[in-house]
Image (cartoon, rainbow, N blue to C red):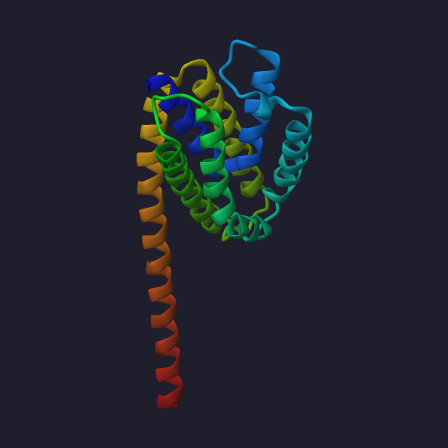
Length: 201
């Protein structure tokens, strides 16, 4: 049972960062290594081609300042739902966990990791230099690759890593939104002071 849950948790968290790369990597693992417990559907040529094309599109979309945030907004529903569907495919006929539980676990983890990614990107987009987006994006791509690899090769370790990453993601989301709220309050105060100065004149 830990192996199934670890695979679902790992793929779910990774899907929240990059759904298409997660599907592509799982499919490739299933195609190359027959001992890997990946359903044949994910290893099929049509799925690999579609996932590969979408991974390439996301690779470039993810590195364009502000467009990446638009892309993330669009995928706020796509990634968690995709992760839930992927989880039900991965569970298959396994009796260790029900489809509903697998979908809920993967979808929830995807929503958290997506929230951390989207929040980070909003913060990074305020930076005047153009390189931070690409650096963060490459880090995210590497994170997806590592988590998927762990989920396939060592699901138990993946479960531990995902638990830690999820906790960090929640802390990051809270910290970033507090920062955003603080900046908004400063802007409002500055605007109010400007208006008062205009009235006094």
